[in-house]
Amino acid sequence: MRRLVVLLSLVGALVAAATALAQSPSPPVRSDRIFGVVPSHELAGPPQTGMGNLQYHGGPAMHTDTTRAIYWFPAGSSYSANYVNVNNGFLQNVAADSGKTSNVYYSDTQYSDSTNGRILYSSSFAGSVIDTNPFPASGCNDSYTSICLTDKQLQTEISRVITAQGWPRGTTNMVFLYTPKNVGSCYSPGSCAFSSFCAYHSAFGSGSSTTIYANQPYAAFVTRACDSGQHPNGDDADATINVVSHEHNESITDPLGNAWFDMQGYENGDKCAWNFGTTLGRTAYGYYNQVIGSGKYYVQQEWSNAHRGCVLRGT
Image (cartoon, rainbow, N blue to C red; front, side, top):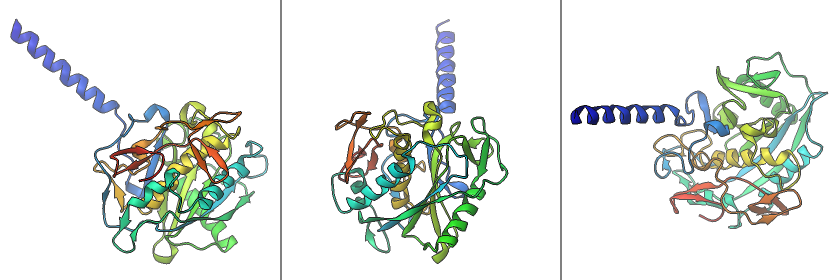
């Protein structure tokens, strides 16, 4: 009888372990050039997800970066009154604080590549464009939005705007593509905005035509999936800024998916997704944990190898 009880206990433990493993978040997608997937809240893992410190895999990092923004907002699009200004202001403030040790971006400077040495905190913002061209016919289906765009459709839009604007490409330039409310995207069947992810970064092309970009759905559209929980600027943009910071830091340290990630494929942002650390204060609209340039923001922490944990400033 005792043996039977022990055997049943072992079986129960194995079943529980298998169930926990099945329910645990999968490592970020690294095939098909989709990286740094911010999981929706339902799929997010525990704080400090992944395994061990980041490891270098031989690819390039972004030692300096110039950011630009595309707001794909056709006529009739719905978005908050200050959405564009607040998002642009964040990228401007990140650039204005280049070289400082007081915000989360400085944590990237502990990483390096085999070509140019350590990453510099040296960012610039080169402007944005509001593109009012209509969306193509939906190329995918998701459970939350009436319009769904494939990653290929997003890449086509990015290339079209870059060409029209005469923007440079290459591994020191990055484009953020923002879409309005009720517009989703999928990078594969079943891997869609809000039900699966809140943002990701990727790249296409090669050599001087390499195009580094991040897909930034309207995070506040499905608050239970992608909202940060605090809006210190009193605008929906605050929710998006959190995942913009995630993708920006990851693109700096792992722009092509072959530089810095841990043994399970997690990048510096992935390992600390939805982990915000200690707040610094409160505006009239909500708490903030970063003062960057002239702005106050609530963004997740980033992984630091030096601290073997998530940090909001320094290395």
